Structure formats: structure tokens, C-alpha cells
Length: 95
Image (cartoon, rainbow, N blue to C red; front, side, top):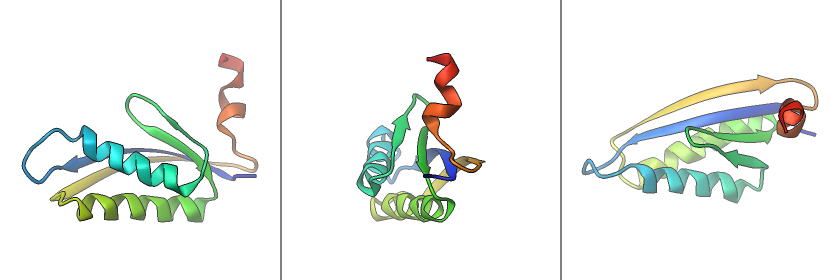
């Protein structure tokens, strides 16, 4: 079972000042390709996994933004680290 929840918001500076949402979609595609459980929210995406693999995922998302020509990337990240961390368990009383 996972030991970490990570929420991330990627804010790329796009090559020509265009809308950044298609770039965020690309970052979410990187998350999806990881096979880890995730939940897209309006302002951030939360992923469930092991700390080490989540840190690598941040690197992969930033690499993808650079491949797309982004001049800079802000990655705002939050971690919840605990034995058996689970998105469902953390919010079940609200569902």
C-alpha cells in the first residue's frame, strides 16, 4: 500500500504566451501513464504512491514541459506521508 499522497499544481510559462491548459493536460498524461491512482481537481492533481516514485514523477512532468518548449515551470507540491496513505481513507467521512 502507498505511503504518500502528493498534490501537485504545474504552472508552465508557455513558449509563446499561449493558454497553459493544454500543457497541464500533458502533465496529467504523464501522471496517467505512471499507472498510479490519481484524482484531478480544479486547481491540483493528487496522486497516491511511494515517496520515491512520486518524486520521480515530478521530474518526469517537468521534463515533459521542457520538451514542449516551456521557458519555466512552477511546481507547487504538497505531501501527506503516513503508513497506508490513501485518498479514499482521508476523505471518506466527507463522501
